[in-house]
Image 1 (tube, rainbow, N blue to C red):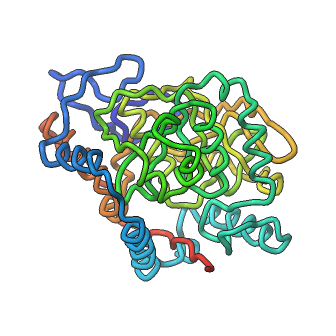
Image 2: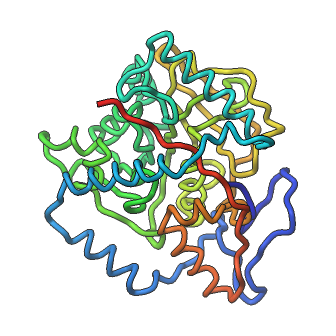
Length: 351
């Protein structure tokens, strides 16, 4: 997944850009927020019905999530095994880190850590260091990934009286959910920090929501402390979520991006010249032993890059398909689609 942006202003060379019709203001300009019409009625009704529902079937939700993961595993091939894959170097680094964490037993449940954002020994300590950052203390709304190693970050966000924005896992069963301490009780706050709890207690929002995000926390497989270059697990969801928040005018270039990782996940061999325009760099790294300010010079993505978004990835995510149709209706122009791809395998959880 990579690029053709609704709007771009940095140094990465790009093919011919798609742009909206001249009679319409350009989309996706964080510095000049544009009012956006609501989604078509069916989409809005679904969100309203979900938000209004007072009961939540945990077993059904978890069964659906596991079923989707199992179906994905059956249909996906190992991306790193594809001959000539230009992203093969990323898989070499990921596998090295995953293997190392398992071999040194610094991995925690769920295991094995392969093909996931790895949970690591000392994750709660790294989370505490993150919560002591000035940017965290000042933030009123924090977007945190739904992975296990950042569970304590989600708890500290809620427990600190902040608004928590969390994406539904793999964006398959929904979009973002918003949670606040006032929505919870002392008995439910810890559960609300899990993927099931987010769906159970959170308020779902759509792309038309007006929300300002002050800080973004992402999970990582590997990160370079000198450049801020980051590798996720290879599915591209952090990049998609970032692009959608740019579309919503909820963030801009100044919004800090923080990751929490084990010290062994720090690397020095991510070639920044091979990074793609959608790759999200990090400004701050928190490990169990230290806090690193990267002062990254890597440009941050400016939106969603449709010409790199494969039909397979688009087929996974309903809200992206909705957004694509919405933009095409508004502009009267067909958005490009990226080349077909073999999606990476999902994680296999040991119970």
